[in-house]
Length: 316
Image (cartoon, rainbow, N blue to C red; front, side, top):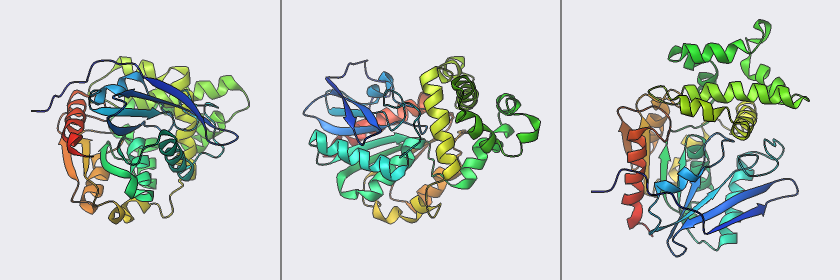
């Protein structure tokens, strides 16, 4: 039977910075087996950045683990930068990284926003993807964005009250614009305060059971600023045309081995989105974790993800 716990902590054998244009420079790293099967980890958000824990979903004796912080996120610079930050740029960045590392094809692993980018990348470059591991599906449709801003209060009224209370009553009819104004304010302290409230709202809604540690981590400066600014930027501009483009273009990737892993009680990215993807893509394995919310660190989701990386060892 495949293992279900995370692999031991490990350090990268190589790190670097990839200058993708005159504005953006991306942090990237490799760990595990330099001669192993390449796997690309795509973090969530958008804007959340990656962490050392993310290396641990993969057997380091088998996989060549490639992680990067996307534009404006984590250790990439400039932090929270919104210019030239959209899905076509992110997809092009992944191709530039793949070519620089001399990788012909790779396994792609992404959760939440990482699932969005994984699907978009695979649809643009299906010949470069040997498999997809997708978790907590987000397809960036307007209904999903509206749910994040207003619908999550149905399950997390306390967290939503904290989120909305930061905004003056007169501006609460359009929370996205109200936060956008503050997240792009000239005063850095205004930007930072708004970012913390936004990010901690998401963190508070991300687990089935309360996780004070996750909420606290969500308020950390780098994480909060990258996540909130870039998330609001993508939500506000909704850059997919048509908005159900990822569903419409599933035929481009139906031949790629894939697994969809979804927490039954995921409030941030509700299960109806994963269900819609699976109905459009019945060839993909579909695993519903019955006792989990959104976070990849939920015990059941963590187990399902590790089991998927173990199963996908047969891919080359």
